[in-house]
Length: 309
Image 1 (cartoon, rainbow, N blue to C red):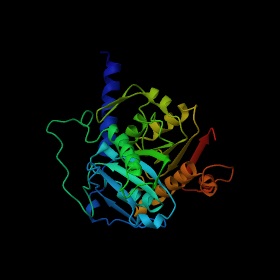
Image 2 (cartoon, rainbow, N blue to C red):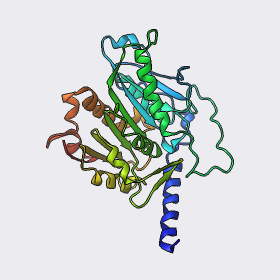
Image 3 (cartoon, rainbow, N blue to C red):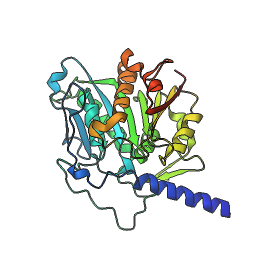
């Protein structure tokens, strides 16, 4: 192997490890209370016995939805970790707006915490997979099965045409890896992107930029500005995507984003507007993203680009 190739491989491993390590929650996450969301439906999180290796976020009172249908938002965790509560403030806010949000893993921080299983001895950050992309697909399978099952609390309450996949950092790569799923109506990649050179090797996944060809829906990248370790990768993804409408929104928060701000912070509000536009056709929500005077275009906290709309 040439010295240049060795250097490239070492650099890829370092970036892969950084993606995983820097995506962990803050040290005091257990002391951070769940927040109530900004939507009309007070949310809750739980482990459903029918989906025991995931955390489900939903409106606490499903009857309060009336005739409204739940959209589905499946989310890959930062670090591809098995802590399905690692973005709980973000996911609770999504649920408060009438979505069923699902993350793989258990509740391993904050209210309702249980202890996470230990990392196997000797497992590397590059090869060890605490969660797998297939779990995102399994979450969609479960939601649609529950929608069709008489006796389920979700029976008839989910719109099969309102399915989004998303993920933070390593979880964003998981989302990209199943983007070809025809049931998916939009993809949101957060603080993430495929490596510019060579293969993306992370948590058991091996991907290249060819994976971007699987995108078949409008896609949003949310990045943390130039200090985000995923910034260059995400911006390169955006530049290379030319077959579906795509947007990229940057906020100067680095790789950690606003996940641990109350209700998931400004990023959660952008994601909710995107979901309401792409899944529910909301003209009001679309004004955040399109038009010369769009909301993100005017907001000094954001740097926003889009194409193909």
